[in-house]
Image 1 (cartoon, rainbow, N blue to C red):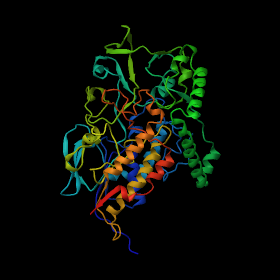
Image 2: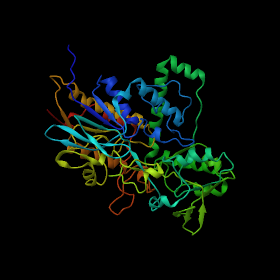
Image 3: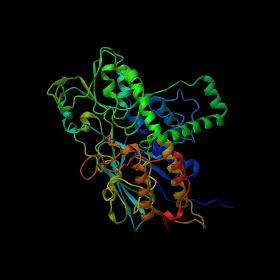
Image 4: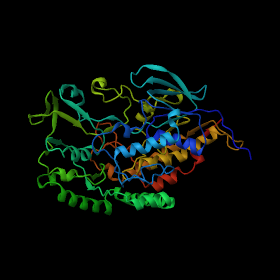
Length: 511
């Protein structure tokens, strides 16, 4: 039987981070497809593991699971690994699959719009460093893989005051940054650290351990053993998800154990104030890398006094006191995709952000409607299975709304999405007499049905527990109590089931 021939269609991938690399590798290895281009705004690939290099930076998801299933690494040094080892892994597979030749660096996809006449997306390209327009290009299939957390979040009212400070500003932008950073920098007893916080987190022991030479040898020589080990991590996490249902017995047991752990590791003067008032999991649970113990060091102090402003020598507190510092580090995380990134300070002087972001909200579908307009009509970002939106044909979003999980590996969730993505685009790229279409688009009724089901389940989880997490958007009153747009309310096995094949009744296929 003759093999289907390529249709000549072109795929564009926006973003050269982990998601962009993952889908590019899948196109090459699973479909044998090469006519694609990755546009990356930075001069190098790597995404979050390129950008975050602070002392102690690492991942709290087991490394054997925080990696591609098609690219297992039998030589991970430990259960949880640090940033350099993670970046080295992605550098190796990037080189293995020759993605350098498929990537255009320093190029920002500033916006994109669907052209009904050509049945293609027209992309406007800007220089990633200067923001200057450098031309346009077209795509038959468009894949956004820009990640979820693009814009740094600052305490309310402080972003516009950054230039007041005459010392050094450090930007460490990760939810667990302080827990990772303080134990490392406080090892130097000459460094005096004051850690300001507003809302405490729940802590669990990190439980990290090194893999022995024998274990690595077994993983190298008995691949099925490595596969079974990866599956055991997957299934363990799925069992643990039960604890994210609000009021569940496991969630209550989590709270009891976490309280015991905090009280036995934090200094007595801080222990009770470090115990949250919300249910475990409402905010991300921190796997403690020694943070609670380091609070006992004489050069570390903790303060929950509100910060009112930034002055030339440090911080002005709400009680009127001025605290002087040589360095201020913001570890206040990211904001989930904003409609448009407008810096509040000079990126050239602080070297913190590029002037523009490859933001999904500049994506235009049919009839000129933008994704921002579509999202605003629904009270925040929404998608079918986190990746597809009505009126945006031939466009897919990796790790879009409601894909992440409080217990799961984002790499795995992206791979599960990619399974459905490849099934959708294969007939476009390799048409056959029995399976011919050029355009795919999710039906509005399928989109609405899925999101109604999704939000109904989310309302039963700890993520709506009123802790002020970043998983939710602001409601009409301006509070952070709108709908949950980040998290998927179920186990990864459920997400796998939903993505494993196309439900043809949910899609519109046209020639």
